[in-house]
Each structure stands twice: as C-alpha cells, then as structure tokens.
Image (cartoon, rainbow, N blue to C red):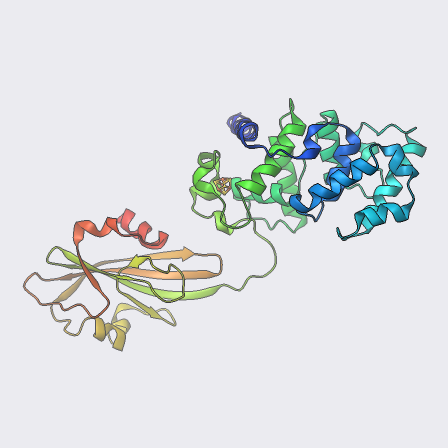
Length: 356
Ligand code: SF4
C-alpha cells in the first residue's frame, strides 16, 4: 500500500515537472499516430536537435502514411541522408506499405498490431500506443533505465536480463494510467534534462526526497552495468590534530580526486597499514617530527566508494598537549577548531565530521 502510494507520488511529481518544463518539440503538436511513429523512428540513435529538421522535412514531403507508402524507396533514403542507420529508413518505408496493405491504410491503434510493423520494437510500440491512443504501456529507453535505476538504487546491471526485467516492471508500475502518453514523455524528458547521464541535477530535482541513490549519496554509482570497471583501491590515513584549540588542514592540489577541496593532513599508503607501522614511515615523521607529546584519542575506519576508486580510510584523532610545540609542515593551514566547517571538504571528510 505504502509502496503504491510512493509510486503514484513519483508519477504525479514527474507529470507536474513535465507540465512546467516540457520541451516545445514539433512532433508534440499532434497525437497523430503516423507523426508520433515517424518522430520516434527518427529519434532513435539521433539527438533531438538533429532529428528536428529531418522530422519537419519528412512530414512536409510525406504528410501521411499513404504518401510515404507511395514513395519510391530511393526518395525516402535520400531524405534520410545524413541520419545514419539506413535500415531505419527502409523499415519505415516497408512499415508504411504494411499499414496500407494489412490495416487498410489506417494506422493500427493497438499495441500488438503496432509491434507487428517492420522495424518497430517494444519501445516504439509503447511510445506510439501510449502517446497516440492512451494505451497503458510504459516506455523503457536509456533515459528510463537511468532514472529508475537511480530512483530505486537498482544494483542489478541494466544490461542483464534480470536488470532489464526489474526496471521494466518498475517502469510499468510507475506509469500513470490516466495519462500514459504524457507520463512516458515526462520521464524521458526528465532523464534528458534533469537526471542526466553525467552530473545529474539532483539539487533541483523534484524527486530528490524519493530518490534512494540520492539519499545514499550514490547517484553516480547508477545505472550499474555488467561491464567490468576496474576499481582502484587506495589507503588513506587522515590526522585530525587537536592542538591548543587549533587544527590543521590542507588544500588538495594535484590533478586527483577532490581538487581544491580541503582535508586533514593525509598519508596515503600503497597497502593497508596499522598505526605502529605507519608511525615508522618517513611521511609520518615529516608530519610529526617530535611525537613524544602526541596521543591518539581515537580512530575511525571509513570505506568510501567512488565510481572507479574504493578508498579505505582511517581518521586518527591526534591530541597534542597545549604546552607542546607543533610546527605544521609547509602547506598545512592552521585554523581554529570551530572553523573547520567553513571549508569545503569531500563527502568522505564530511561523513567523518558528521560522526565526531
Ligand atoms: Fe536523478 Fe538526482 Fe533526481 Fe535522483 S535526485 S532522480 S539521481 S536527478
């Protein structure tokens, strides 16, 4: 029950977002199934900006399915020139003839008949039947895979049968039965404009509070694919030094992760290392030339996952007595303890600061 309500909330929010932000595209001016189908075929593997002019040329030359069926194949291919994937043009032409021969010139109005047309797969059949005839079929394209895998933090790779099945089922359960066509266009536009492949605009996303991957701060982890991605393991040892109401931070400068963010003094090692071992390294002695007056109050282990890196981190809280001298090595910034939160830090350091 709760789940059902959550899903209808998501659909309602998507429809509301679409109502305010939908793109003004020429094929949206009509629900004519021929035009919807034409636009869907043109837009496969084609960017909207490029498909736009082709669509206008096609409807100008072939304003209805009869005129397309009557055309010479050469003429269709010529008009298609530059769009690539020429089998799409040939199938388009063949399907127009099917409509004339098998459906008496009337574009079929049910999902199964639309699916039987040459070159039409489940995506196109769902798009045409929902947009032109309000049939309850959810579209599942790359945008939908991405949006749903992030919203529900689907760990199954989207290029596997199991992953596809899960996402298709969720897509169908989210579909607004009152406005399936509008809903399908809404989720696709949302994927193109907000929940984009890279750098999704989560901060302005109306689904933020319902998005599992956002709530877990893992939007960049989805969608998961089965292609093996090599993950680099790194071992970070951070020192949160407490000395006479001060602590020490540094700005990351290298062309590495988190450039220009601040962090505690860091020693990175090539393998896991306990404190005893670490305290004998040159890096540790450079940071703490005289370690007689320091004590480790506590340490915290945090595993942090980035897209291509897994960072095993230990945060050491190091106390240096007020009367003891500590000369920070070059590059470290001395700040008052309570000003720590004024500096931009990585999510990893932020997590630590939330806990302490
Ligand atoms: Fe996509 Fe971010 Fe919105 Fe989640 S919060 S649906 S990841 S844009």
